[in-house]
Image 1 (spheres, rainbow, N blue to C red):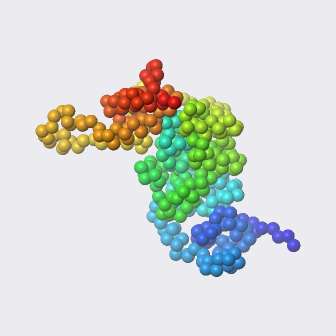
Image 2 (image 1 turned 90 degrees about the vertical axis):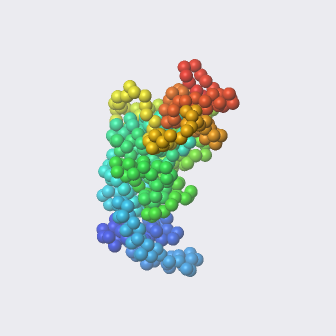
Length: 403
């Protein structure tokens, strides 16, 4: 006789929530297995009781379920970190994820969960982004945020960081590959604190978990699942951003991409996506029109007349000399007070410059602002790279990579 699966009901008590947590934290239980067990047994508590026998039937004689003490410790760690546990089916759980067949049963969140009620757009891309790429990410994130859209990304270096920074005033959500209390990369610790204070941080992983390579594709499906569309800004052919784009397609979401120069490897993935049918993005209007989020008109923000300041968190700032060191006589000449950078420093600066310049011309003053270094430090490095044939000077004070 054919039997219908038990209807899904969210947990209603704290014991039910802990049972959900024990089940998903038990060995070899992923999201798909979790939902199958819940359908077959009606509740997480019943599934936990049946799990050892199911494992023995599958050949795992020494199987034990996740101990209650482990999830109690995780719950305590979550409260200490200011995080909140959301279970699928609860009012605060994001609707966009709830409809996925592999929806995370539980999410740890820190911050403003009301952002889930707003339309979301994912913005992802290269970690070693060019200056043009980061500028495009900032512009898209700021303009989409001004239109009432929450920007979702993964708190990685490069494009993710630029997107979160630009969207902080309007609303941004960071999906973590590890625990919601573990910041990766560590250089984004200050940014993560701002996101938690003014936006939202999300993870399906246990508190305190350090991210590993296998966790990032799982994280990517949440990024794309939350969003109505995923925008890719600079992505090489084998980048994780393309995994996010493919996942978005599998979830029935829109994929959009910013085109790039054909000679720039960082744009090869985006160009391929556009060739294969992704929406070409020139600005926020294209995104809003493609996703049906409005009339396609984004109010232009007033731009300051003063030169742009270096981006926070994106570049390392040169260390300032303590006042006591300035006042203390050293007997050194003025020339020795500002020593020529050693070979290692020069090599690192060359690498930073080449990371930010692509085949598409970039204004030299914009490059200097993006690097956050004095022009007298950058100019000799540009001359050196030009003499080496690695960069080309174009009319109008523009620079490009030699190809």
